[in-house]
Length: 202
Image (cartoon, rainbow, N blue to C red; front, side, top):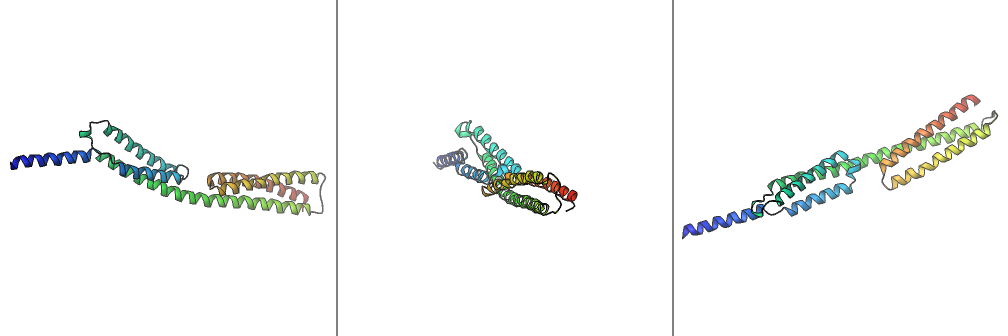
């Protein structure tokens, strides 16, 4: 009698263990997917592409292992490896999120510095034009040349509004690129104005 009860208890324990092993770790999977969503919302693809790529690879490993286990008979499924992959994916997603937040802040600073530099170059060009207009000796064709340079400055200055808009919507990568391009153009205008100033001996 005792042996029969022992056999029954062992069978029950084995059954419970098998059921536990064969049950998909949905709670852990949900947590990992939530971590991936947080990383995506932090714009990890833009500001932490390497970390985001690793997180995606880790999540792909989770899905592959889940599919492999789900394809087995229920009694022989084991999600131990799946849980390990899920933990790795959740860690990778958290790292991608943190790296994205740091990268975004860094890009914000770089974009602001680029915008400030572009504006400084534009201000310098404006001051140079004012200086040229005040020169007592103006060569032939000066008025036409100044009109062209002012038109060039106006066009460049208008781009600052686009940069400010990009900063407002937190598209710092675009703002930085636009600001760097604007500064290069403004620097060229400054060079032309300085050349004119030298020729006029103003």
